[in-house]
Image (cartoon, rainbow over all chains, first blue to last red; front, side, top):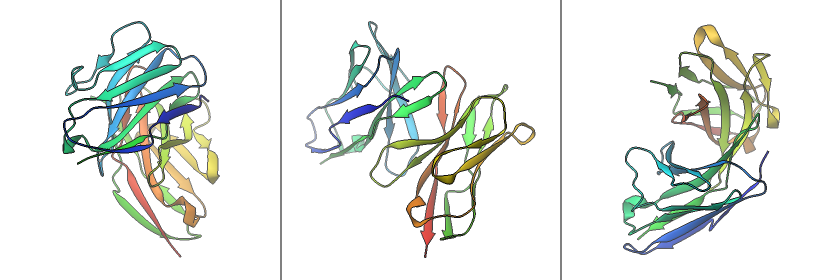
Length: 113
Length: 111
């Protein structure tokens, strides 16, 4: 299965600032996914990122708040903009490979103070 | 609408005891089914998956799961739990276009 490197692994940020999370995959993949896991909750899909096109956002998530880049088939970034304490979560990137299911990065634990 | 239900929010078992974590799904056709484990402060690790074929699936770390179409279930089992199995377990369903997670079951292992 694919190996995903995600960074930073954790960060503490001031409200009103932005954080960019990077996700690097060891092989080319068509789609990359970004999830949020709020404290004590399950995972919620934020958006799907395809190379060469705009990301597709799920209901409740908007590009201005969570801009995503997908410059090539092995890399993507998610930015959490204008952060507030409610954005404190674990953010995970994921890829899907045929017959391998979904592989997840180790996550970014974000705390907004 | 598709959904995944994990009825047990929290389970406590003694080390060495057997374990079964329940998962039920709602979907019109046979979905792809997954179990993931999340250790404290960590990301998600795939334990096992079911796409088709043998309904009893073997995974890593001694886990297995059985797909029962008649019950729309995909329960995770382990015959003897180790203290290192304490973690959050997520059942997930893929319909090809969408991926749905259950709310998770937190496992505590006592000596």
